[in-house]
Image: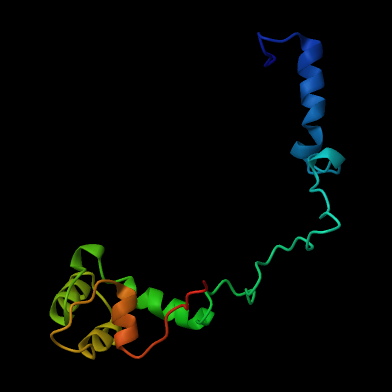
Length: 136
C-alpha cells in the first residue's frame, strides 16, 4: 500500500518530495539557497560576528572564568530557591537534604553567621569568590 496524500495530486506530492530531497539526504541545495543566506553588513555598519563584543568565546560572563562559573553552579546546584533568602544554617540544612557533597557543605560552613543571603551569588561572593561584573 503506497502512502500518499489525499489533499494533493500525485504530481504535487512528487514536487514537494523533490523540494525537500536535499534536506533529507543532506546534499547541497537544501537550505543553502541564496535567498536564505544572511545579507552582508551595510557600508556604514560593523561586520557581523557570531561572538558578541567583549566575549572571550568561553561563554563565561564578564568578570568570571568558565571554571569559576562551573564552581558557582556546582555550589548553587544543592541550594533550592525555597531556601533563599536564608542564613548559613538554612542553606546548610537545604544542601544536606539535597545530598550535597562534603566540599559544598564545607563551603557553606565557611559562610558568616547572622547574614541572610538573598541569592546564591551573594553567598558565593561572601566566600570571597567573584561574580560577573555589570556593564552599563
